[in-house]
Length: 269
Image: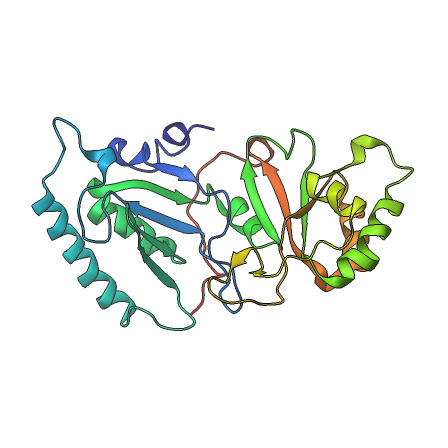
């Protein structure tokens, strides 16, 4: 699916080539339901043009860009009242290379493109209502061209806890012992764990290094790839809270590519 083909009838030509189907919900953490709309601008935290835009004939000047960012700030404050309300239906991220806003409101997404589209690098949105609804089915949904390893729809990530090594790892190897190899795939971390089941790494908590402090945290890095939804359910029933996440891939050709307006009923009011 090429973005400029999908959205060519939904937006003007200069915008449609910048709009792409969203692959996942961004910042999906309780109580936030997640952001299905993303707009990335061609500037960094100081409203300076990022180096991808440094071409011999740039379409706008830095002065124009700064004026645009001031206008965007004014519009956001007017619409959202306060910048960091909680729970928030807006997330504004200033990075070293780009400024990105994440939205829950379909109309606001379109307004941003209409008013400031000249300064947008990339915008992401659901293709249609079907796509939008599927994003909120549960777990982490990814829209991609191919499955994991070209074969597996599901990816299960595990927390590295004491119970994972003493109970869950032996159960997983036993559960899949007599199954066809095509049904599942353990990542390489599992092989090392199977050989030495006492691999707790001090100084890490959920894959984040706690610099300058010694902790009793755990390192995350154990993934199981599965083809069957039933296998996912069995693993979830057995392991429960020691599952870090479950990701599911929906291939692009499994949903309609007909662009429709979005009824964004899942947004936080």
